[in-house]
Amino acid sequence: MNTCMAVESRSGKKLIKFFLLIVILVLCWYLGRIFKIDVGYYQELLSRYPLALSGLIFVLLYVLTTTFVWLGPKDVLRISSAVLFGGAVSAVFVWAGEMFNAGIMFHLSRFLGREYVQQKFRVKPQDLDRMKDDATLLSVAAWRINPLVPFRFIDLGYGLTQISFRKYLIGIAAVSFVRILWLQLILAGIGTSLFQDPSSMIAYFAGHPHVLRYSGLYFLFVLILTVIAFAARFFRKRADQSGEAMAESFNS
Image (cartoon, rainbow, N blue to C red; front, side, top):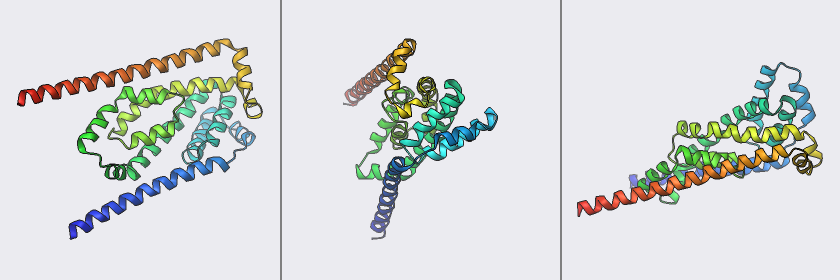
């Protein structure tokens, strides 16, 4: 009787934690739709201080306004920083902010969601071991460098797996900077005109064919890394299956 009550109590706590995670995610989405940032105000604010101090202020603002407020603020702050600091320097500041965000989202997902997902979908211990094996540095890097996959989804998704945060952070650090640098260099060239006329991006690429070539090389690198990651996963699974088959044959 006591055992059943204890199991029900743990299940209830897992459900509450998972429900809290869903509420937080919905709130993040909603805040991103209503939250507005005055670009001119933040540019004027950051321009008052030396680069090191303004960079620190920017990282703090970026983390505070984009960790739990999605969609709007991140894009505005990225463009503003690209115009104010330049493409390369702003990429360093955005990268620092995204590393903090990754830690927050990863641990939020792990603390509030993983136990419930494991219980609800009856994930077995061997499945968890397999998920941990699949979450390699190569696969993490392949997902992270893909510009079509939002950083937040990756952080939350891997928080549900068995991968350690240290391994995850190592896997995303370098490729995150490559992805951010590519975009910040483009945003620095387009500037705030992107707010008034989104088609200015097309005009920018038309007037800067070298940027278009670099972008093509970037996407080619993304494709190659993704293919390598999936190929490595395929051959690893084949090797594991062959090893299990040999073990069963030997035992029989």
